[in-house]
Image (cartoon, rainbow, N blue to C red; front, side):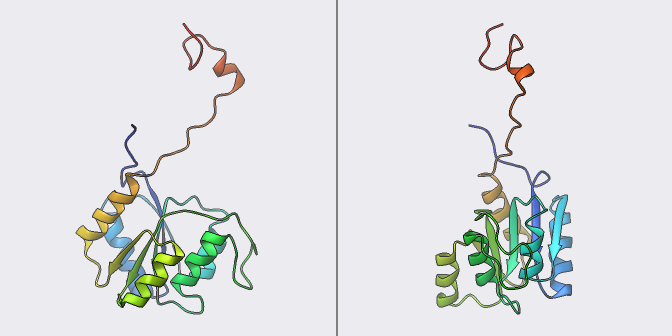
Amino acid sequence: MAAGLRLDEISLLVVEDDTFTRNLILSILRNLGVRTIAEANGAGMALEMMATTEVDIIISDIQMSPVNGIDFLRHLRAGTRPAGVVPPQAPPSQIPVIFLTAHAQAKLVELARAAGVSAFLTKPIRPALLRDRLLQISATLRRQEPAPTPDQSAQPGSAGVPA
């Protein structure tokens, strides 16, 4: 069984409407060795970015406006988009999502789980705990290998062709 992706191989999208908190998260991620990080100041922007940005894991705040984190996750999973977001539809996505929240009430956790969240972290953010969650999730991720071209598959010694 192949190993998952290392932290320096994953691409993250941080969705946080508070600039200070978003910058703090970005700093922590860089210190953890994550190299590819996109950022969005809200759910609408994040959903628009999904059309053009390759993302392995999303880290999102729950308490955002006008679209909160749970609604963001519901749109992501269903492939729908809130009014005004371009494109208006997209393929449903199972990209792992980690929610950050200062409010971990049972009802909120229940709603997030029903929407398909992958993990929760409470604020204030603890770098070691964030690293652990990222490692747990990245262990399940694999990069798609490009399909061999017809020329490659006919070469002696390539997969399926004896040398």
